[in-house]
Length: 255
Image 1 (cartoon, one colour):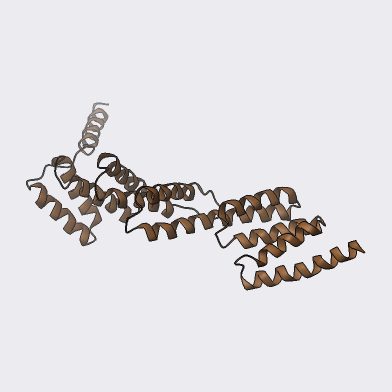
Image 2 (tube, one colour; image 1 turned 180 degrees about the vertical axis):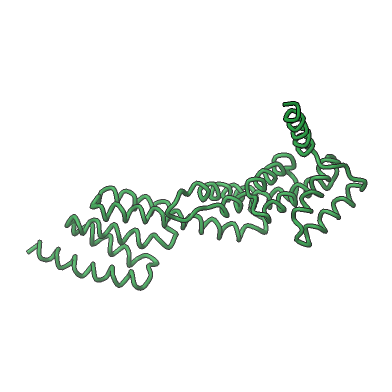
């Protein structure tokens, strides 16, 4: 029993020793410590760089290098695909150093962290929604940033992904013959994501819903709207065929 107690005590001591909240002290000044950490980062030694940046942050909290150290510490986590830790460090930078020139890039990188964790379109899109939220904050708060073109592309890509998911859900309702629900879903898609590549497909399925209910007038309008959109050529041809058939139905019912 005494032997077991000794082992437990040694194990607890080892655990506590490894759980220190701060990296060891450094014998360098802030500038040299930053240069060492950045050199490790530039050579792709992200784990080593992470340790050195943490030393700087802990040992020189009032240094002019601290905001940049927080940014590159977050970058180290990002490069290791530890997006949770990266997001935390980027946010610490923004909160503690809101006027830093690294605050804007940090805000963009928070969005990128969420984007990188986004799941395939048929799964939950919580991370995609978070990425969109953070991208909009970035574009509003940092309109002159060099990252704006990339952020705009990323925002459109993320919104297009959500539009695709809504389209798949709308098609599912259509296949289940739940036409009213499908139309509501797809019209909401058109309202939120009219500028994405899935808008024309949504409009076409709306036409199919009306056609399946023999509502020829709304069906005709829906298919005609497809031709007024930036629809792929194949989809446009299908819409034109539907228009020809629906017009015949309308003519027959009016005679």
